Image (cartoon, rainbow over all chains, first blue to last red; front, side, top):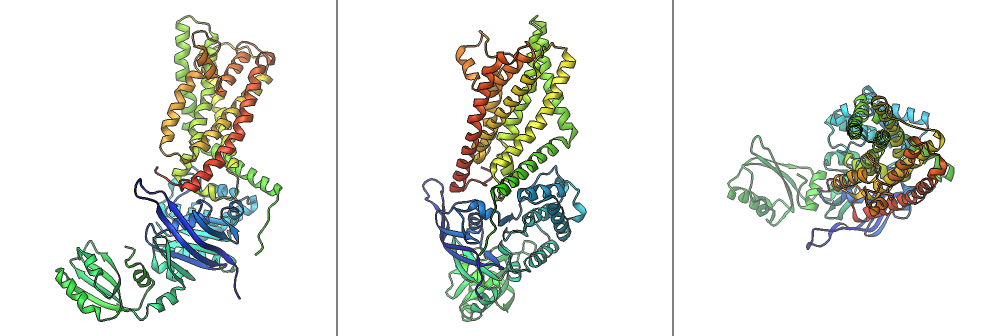
Length: 325
Length: 279
């Protein structure tokens, strides 16, 4: 059975004025996207890829330059006030609220922006503070909270109106591993009834792999691929993924990128050891000999190498040509 | 796909709740720290005191001291309008709150209205403190016979001032650090033109065109009317023109605030500057 679409964009385009003489910056370029009700949809992309621009258009904070965008069937430009009753937005790293007020007071204030009744607000605040581990801090001033707890408060704010569509822009930014896991568990339980939709942007591939029903990979304003994490990984199954640890790191990484047969490459450096880990997606194994000789020419030594099953990160590298790091 | 519909009554209720909540935040936030209140009452009295002492030492009429105390109390409103109303969207943007307001399903005017009410209540308490302390310390004369008209004019003045604050808040919405400079520019000239520390209209020493310009500021008109009633024993017949002017200010400024707010919000969305920080 085909489910209703919660989010839909058609040829969505957004330009920003660039620096004088440099022309306009294309933040979104003919983006077509459909997110069904009940889905957690992940948007993956490097900084400046257009993720936040897309979320801001859908959350009625920004007008598109051309194209159409719909939330719950409502066109975002013409029906902004109606859409706002159905959505909420949480931007990771933001800590909206008033430092002088307590957690409970801040949440009560947010609840009033959504017209919750006194009892409804009280129950919702209790439920959210319990579930997000804020229960011991309800009477603490927001200014006294640690960054992680402020972020939890921000998340509680996002759920206060029980939105039909929730936009989460890097929600686990600033959260420790345990808190991020708690949040993921909370989102899944919140979505259990199948009527809620989440559009999530993240830099954490494992998070997207674990949480999202489908992901879209976006770069320079274009959606390069859109499917379930499993299917995206399967498409890459014929292309070997390798992890090679080298020392010292290669100064001219672009010279490696130009080797024919390398689909994508990302490098993670370890400052303590001076070693680098190269993640590579190759056309086939025959590239390995040229690759190893290039590493050697650069004066680097191979410390370890292993072949791995394709991950979402490999999919990302193969499509974007580089990693997120 | 069935979507919930919302009637006029529910929408109104929702906006009133938001306005009340924003007012509550302002009152709670403004009074939680006792030091804020003490500083905002005692420090202005020092400035007022300097003028009262100066006028006394020059042998000028004691009513000038009364005028200064009333002016000092009204200055609290102008400061609040500038820094806590006009610049408020800027603060909210820097704190990350503007995005939250813009995504919420309530009228931005409801939020501004709530801010205004909270500001009026907070500042009225402070202004009363300044007035009581000033009168107690400097023992200046008052001849208040028509308390109803005085209260009515005070209310009109404050509403007109906050309506102006709402206009500024809307215009400042897309501002970055320019807010600081603009507020500085609006602060001292208005202190001077509105006659906070000396009467600036009907005084021959001040050129006519300056007096005329001064009447374009709601505080000048309101302050002059309140002084006429509270210090010189006037009644409604002596200030009816002031009342007309203040009502005219409100009738023009309130709708202007709404128009400016809608315009700036649309412009911000178009240019992508609505929630852009560190400008």
